[in-house]
Image (cartoon, rainbow, N blue to C red):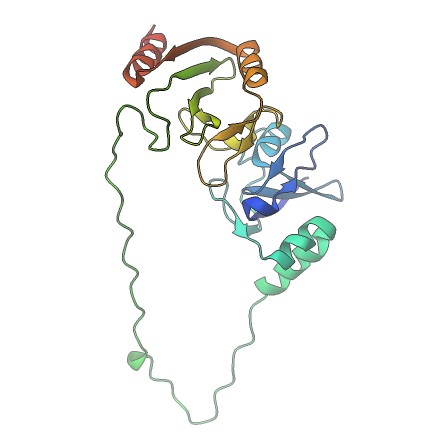
Length: 235
């Protein structure tokens, strides 16, 4: 039976190739390391879910985070092992997992647990108040430009938005787990700081979206696009 050995992540600039046959994506978070029929495979979350049925198909990873986490962030040395010697990386993880030997207390020494320094409690992170900037949710959007929403047959939605620097971006709407691997690599590449794909070929990307879409809506007004999405989904 296949085993999910690890869930790891690397820096965006140090992405690794998904090893699922036919996939050309470079992945950097939620990288699944699977042992399947004696072979180790390194693959992205989308290919993992397609191959085994869902993100939770094989249960929690032995090393790293759960299915909703990005995974254990690898050092550069660990990243090199992931690419060149995955088995050695897993062996290193196993060594770290092994319990450390307990120090032997000298005879007659009694540890007073009540005087132990209390743990410093971590303050909960302050959650930002949800806010939708106008006229769009993206502060980086170029003013007075249009947006186009594409509703695809696979149930996902994508918004074409122009960045202030002139780049055409494709934003998942709403954002979903595995969005950065959901479309073919030729459509766009993930932006290093924005949850969006950068489109190198706008015409080609739009052609792909239309070929796989149910409907689209272009407007310079954010409220018009939201209204059309709401109307279509309630129909």
